[in-house]
Image 1: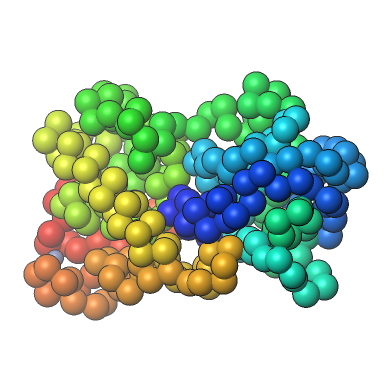
Image 2: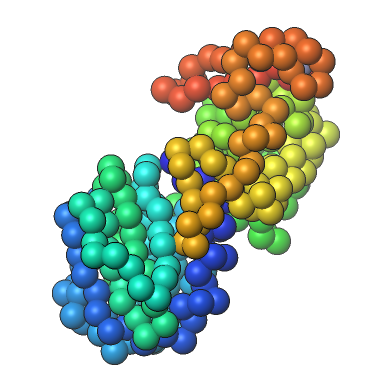
Amino acid sequence: MPELPEVEVTRLSFSEGIRGATILAARLGLPLRWPLGIQPQQLQGQTVQAVRRRGKYLLIDLSDGLLLMHLGMSGSVIFADVLALAGKHDHFDLETSLGTLRLNDPRRFGAVVFASGEDDPVAHKLLGRLGVEPLGDDFDALIFYQSLQQRKAPIKQVLLAGDVVVGVGNIYASEALFLAGIRPTTRANRLSRPRVLRLHGAIRQVLVRAVEKGGSTLRDFSNAQGESGHFQLEAMVYAREGEACRQCGTAIKSIRQGQRSTFFCPLCQKP
Ligand SMILES: [Zn+2]
């Protein structure tokens, strides 16, 4: 599923192009995870002010309100002057004076939701419980350490839960824990301060690198210009079960944690 870096790469690939556009029409396909919340015609005439990101949500600021877009499990966005007729997996088109923004989502776990503002209960429900942005200034190493002290769950589960720090999904949590030398099963509150500081740096490093690389190519991710990413090519542990650790040569292990696959090096990553 698209993780934070893929959503950020998506944002970067169309945010400048659509800025200032006037909405000419909006078209809905099959129902997505949540309803739009207004009639599509009500978007007509609004202008797009900016495109921001919060966690894995794209926030499309309009002259009056905003659209929250989530890519779900399989969503991708394309923004182009001219698009083919909507196919069976195209479930939202925002036709604007500068091009059409289209959400393609075969599994339909994604959504586009209108909110009058970020304090609208609709927006609050989706964004309210999110932890700090890992790439923002609020992601402070010491506060991160203090938050982890309150958690007894395995560190990887805590990262995935998203309420301490948002948007560190399966791929990037696995990779960051490798860089920090931490076993994914280690209880969060058992991590020493120096190890948490290392993890803090590793999370940022992994995410920044992934955005620079254009996101992961896993599950056919591509940005709004149709270009795919290259992060997965250099993964240290993710999806490398049985392969040699790039650092020590030991076979990478895979376990299940909360129904998700976790990959780690039993030698480089200490409990
Ligand atoms: Zn190793």
